[in-house]
Amino acid sequence: MKVLVAVKRVVDYNVKVRVKPDGSGVDTANVKMSMNPFDEIAIEEAVRLKEKGIATEIVAVSCGLAACQETLRTGLALGADRAILVETDVDLQPLAVAKLLQAVVAKEQPKLVILGKQAIDDDANQTGQMLAALLGWPQGTYASKIDIAGGRATIKREVDGGLETIEISLPAIVTADLRLNEPRYATLPNIMKAKKKPMETVTPAALGVDVTPRLTTLKVVEPPKRKGGGKVADVAELVAKLRNEAKVI
Amino acid sequence: MSTLVIADHDNASLQPATFNTVAAAQKIGGDIHVLVAGNGAQAAAQAASHIAGIAKVLHVDAPHLAGFTAENVAAVIVPIVKSGGYTHVLAPATGFGKNVMPRVAAMLDVAQISEIVVVESADTFVRPIYAGSVLATVRSADPIKVITVRATGFDAAAATGGSATVESIAGAPDTGLSKVTGQELSKSERPELTSARVVVSGGRGVGSAENFKLLEALAAKLNAAMGASRAAVDAGYVPNDYQVGQTGKIVAPDLYVAVGISGAIQHLAGMKDSKVIVAINKDPEAPIFQIADYGLVGDLFQIVPDLTAALG
Image 1 (cartoon, chains in turn blue, cyan):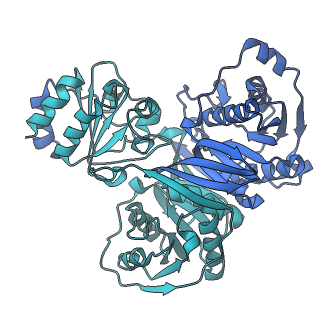
Image 2 (cartoon, chains in turn blue, cyan):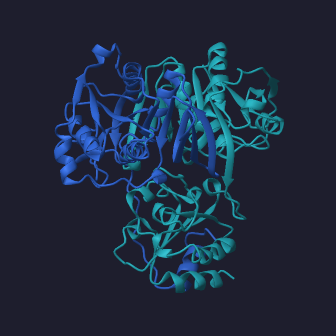
Image 3 (cartoon, chains in turn purple, red):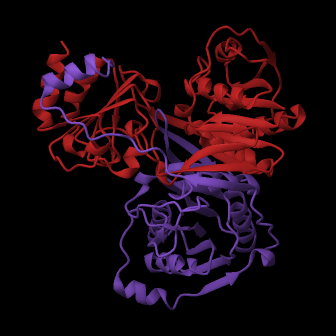
């Protein structure tokens, strides 16, 4: 069974982001970029499915700037077999990415597509669900466990009240939550091997997809800073302050 | 202009975030209808009809809506939005809303605006990005605005005072794509985390599942909900539904007590809008102290029982 994994290039999670002086966006020049952490979990899950003999081929896909090639090379080093970059300079929003992935799915015919549940830059949490809708496929979102047998998938999902188990038919979309697995590190030999793995580049136009943004960002600002840093000496002072100053108990 | 609010409910009652979502709809303006889709959800539909400012409740009841799967719920929502001519479709940014709404948006071929915290106008909204480090103001050019609402951004609409009619309508048939086969829901004596007035949260510093009982005793005294950092959940001290943070639950209680939590940015993203923050940590350099109103440096195993006792 072929598995497709979508990966996004984002500002590294350790970087403290800064708003551009003109408020038009977040400064991404000379900032460390990495694979979205949830997408690393998605890749890892695909690799484990291959190690179990369930997946036969893993195709990593990314959409965006030419620099996304680096992100795809990381995916190849982690165990993907080949990569596809849908290259464009347009600021891609989740609906556009879902349409691009839909076109790639039509060509590649995977049985399973795994994505991270959300990207840590726009925090949208949409692309997997949108792709499922466009394809008319079931969706196993926020997965913390995946079992595949007999053409069906059993997904344990993280929900507000705890955990839920669903059974879905294949082909299907799964989005990875934090506790699905712990991704491995790429080893040096695998990083070297990844350089020789095939990477194909296509454009949105070649896939026949209109990626025009639907949302316009009017401005971005940093939220007001919280005034913290107050200290109390002991429990008695804490209780007194909560009662008399903050009046919350 | 009219808004359809998708209720998050368990058939018997509405989830608290549904009331905040109605409040966001009121800021947009125009008629507000609430859709209650479930199985045996008469009680939830009745509750929705009592919310102040609602013009109508649409109630769709069918056995295949029992699991609230995104496939079946979205299939019900989309034709109702099209035939009703709604300009806005809102749902709370709960696990339910986040799962269902992007599916609705894609079926309508429109963008979704996730987790709004401010309504600037009928087409312009503010939403946090980068774990809340940045607030973006975005405008939608789509004819239908599909939106999820972050409950902490809006004061809840009044649960009583309304007397909307409840209209029972037929919904789309079972898609047959997905079936809920099991649930492991946490049982707790404590209030629900996202709507509690006080939250007591523990981090890696608590050290074990056993030690979380110290926090539970404190929470019981304060009538508080229990929360946790990602590190404590990953370590297996508490179940996943305790997690507060960027990808867990977003809370803004009157009082948030952070115990043994260092204060990673993804945790702060979930609680920094709390009115009063108390931090208890043995490391005086822990980032949590920078945002805490009252920081207490010391051994939590001494401080927490003392605090519990002092609250008598």
